[in-house]
Structure formats: structure tokens, C-alpha cells
Length: 277
Image (cartoon, rainbow, N blue to C red):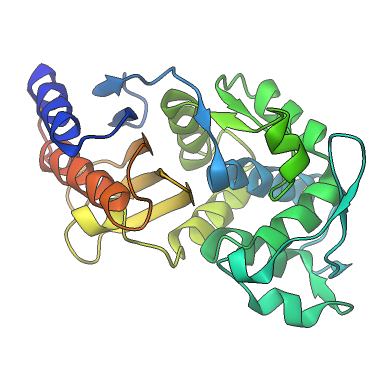
């Protein structure tokens, strides 16, 4: 695997990125690639994987129903000072939910929008209901380190104060592996989460570097000069593997996704084979 990691390091060096964290490995095996994998990055929307887990965990416990309804509202309280704030639909990748303000929407639909369209409004509605501390506690109980959920999204006052959710490549890889192997929650709940993640509509990162049609259950995250993608890849003729690429210092609309796709291409060339030296 030394050859694979060296190849990935060359791809990263050629990109001009300020920082990149990579974790990749087959389920149940040590990481095949670990590059700055324990360095924390601003989570952006990758923290939504932890929110999804809490939704399905509570569903399994009977404390929450996917068909239970939440009234859509665009009014939240800052983690810092409790000041009210609202999200800007123009800055949300899913602006459709804003048109439903005042209407009751199923929890399952909010969870789906949160992942497949990366809806910030759906995320904040869920985080408000679940509690950021409870979401974070669930991650801790699993023994996952490096995924820290502090708040929802769009809280400018908290951002300015440094009260932000953070992730590491290794932490996200661990969390995704526990969902993929069915240990994060009952197997049927984990399978349902993977189906939601596999329906992701933003596929310019990891999927763009893979053969067409490869199943990828993943979650992207981006903000100015930052682009992440984290997922479980299911090769056609090899065991599944996790791949997380966190990037900082590249344009999030082009260069960042291109780097993630390039890393995915190199990793897949090795991990998508049955036998690895």
C-alpha cells in the first residue's frame, strides 16, 4: 500500500491545495491511505452524516417516526448569545424547502433533503429537534473520534466565535464504516442510511473519479475554498471500501472537486481489485 499512498501524495502535491486529509481502506481492514487523517477540518456539510445517524437511531428506538411531521420555519437561535438568525435561500443548495415554510414536512423527507440536496434548512430543523449535543454524544458512544458536532449551519455569530463542527478524515471514515458494516445501528437502519447517502445528487467529487455506475454512498461538503467528500464505495468485483478526502485552499466549485476525483481514481485503481499486494 506504500505505493498507493505515495501516488496519492503526488496527486495532492500537484494540486496546490493548502491542506488535504485522506483516509481510505477496505471495511474491517487498516487504512490503506492515511494522509493528515487526524487533522481537524471545518466540517461543512459532512457533519450531516452524524445528523442522519441520529435520526435513524431514534427511529429504531421508537423515539422518532420518519413519517412524523415538522413544521418548516426559517428562524433559529445562535449558539452564541441566542440571537435570532435566518438562512438565506440563495446560499442553500436546496431552495425548494423554503417555499414550504409553515407547512408540516415528514422527518424522513427532511433527512433525505439534508443529504441528497445538502439542504441547510432541513439540517437546522433536524438539529433543533434532535439537539446538537445529543447528536455528538451518539458519535462519542460509538467510539468514533474526530467527528465533532457543535451546531447546525448558517450561524454566523458562532462561526465568528470559532464554535464550529469539525471532522477528521479518519473520523469520518470510521463513522461511515460503522454505518456500512451495520454496527452503528441495527442493520436495517444502517441499510436505509446507506440508501439515502447513495442517492446523493452532488457527484462531482468521489463518483467522478470512478467507473460509471459504481455505487457510492457519500456526503459532500463545501464552503469558500473548501471541498470535502466522504463515502463508502462499492466496486463491481471487490469488497467495499471507505474513502474520505478533505481539501482546503482550492476553489470549491472546480479545483477542489477535481482533486477529490483524482484521488478517488487512484484509490479505486488499487482497492477495486480482488487482491492487493
